[in-house]
Length: 96
Image 1 (cartoon, rainbow, N blue to C red):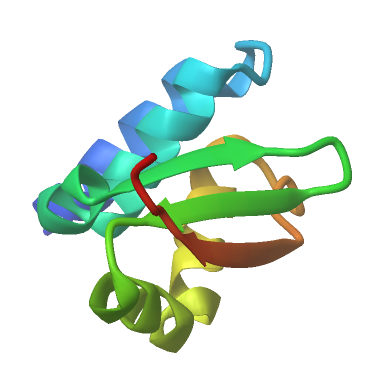
Image 2: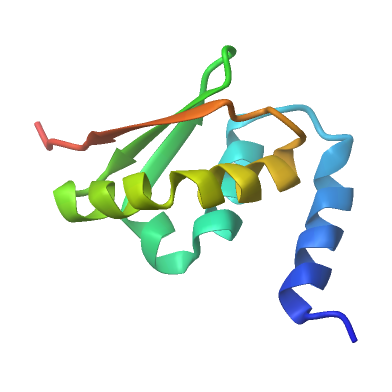
């Protein structure tokens, strides 16, 4: 029996595979990879060199992202394609 999350990830990977790399695609991959709670308190963008820039709401969330960088990178790359994300850079969002 296949776990539901594996089935969903596989379906998303198939749907996203042939789509161009866009802000929406990166955001969707991020949301799926990290879950609702973390996605709600972060924003992301992917640079052409493979750096995923993550802006966290506060230092607590930034610390949690740092702790899980390897797992998050693996999950996002499963959806975006191998080596789309080469590193994650986390900053804390400071409102203006």
